[in-house]
Image 1 (cartoon, rainbow, N blue to C red):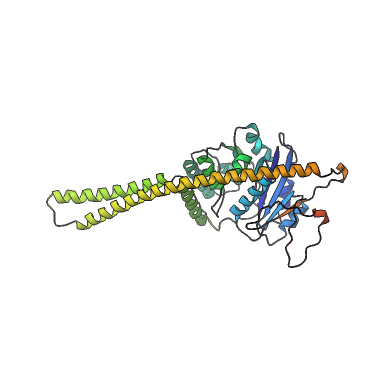
Image 2: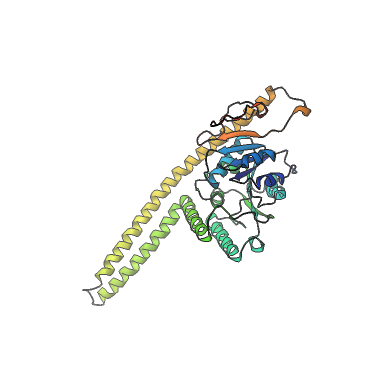
Length: 373
């Protein structure tokens, strides 16, 4: 059983080393534990700090693309590296690394496919009362939209089984936390929450500038994702509401009409007709959106099968390479950080490069890809 702990990082030179050091070296039921740092276009020495701290793999994005893109890149890389369980944690050392064992335990038991760390925000001394209220309200909203009960919807400390990770398709650029929960609920994946510990914050959040920005983006994210999976329900609800308003205004016009006031209230008649027409059109849009969502689900199934096939082929190829390669004596084997350049469309291609130990110094002005031997 192979566990890969992925750490999206952007300018985390000061904290990435401590985050890596806190990751446990042994967990019951896990035979291999590796770390994967996703450098999201950092402008500081995050990569060097990760290498010195002993990161097993480093993936570098060409430019800063945001948390969601770094998360997806990490999941893609971890699957191709043969991970059976993927744990995502933050590079600012917000979460206690020792709780990784607690996080993966339900997956090892087979009782869950996605496990979310619950920070118990209501008791956390690191959050203001306003943030606690908003977090609980947001968690309730996401639980309602996903159909599953979660304790902390915005927690980035979570574990995925290999099968669950294969089914992740994040498209929102703001955050992956809300989207993956709603996706898990709609795909009937087993989701559990476990209590975790947190460390004192080392810096303000970079995901949003203020509470207002966070609320606006979160509401839009939840609405978009829910509409993506339940378009017929959403548009029929909106359409029904518009039709009811139109019917109420039309009933008012008929009341005055049959009461003898037949020369007035023409505006009510026009407004009722507008609401009825728009409501009916909204329902038709819901039908069309539902048909489109069926095609999207079929496309997602094809994508999942493709990712499963590619990941399996890579694992088999790596196994054949290890069998064909002469084994080094144990005292000569060294644990080196494996470097992989992850560009926009060039994702962990199966190319054989020179070992890191034999690599030549990088020339100024040139980018060199160092591949896993």
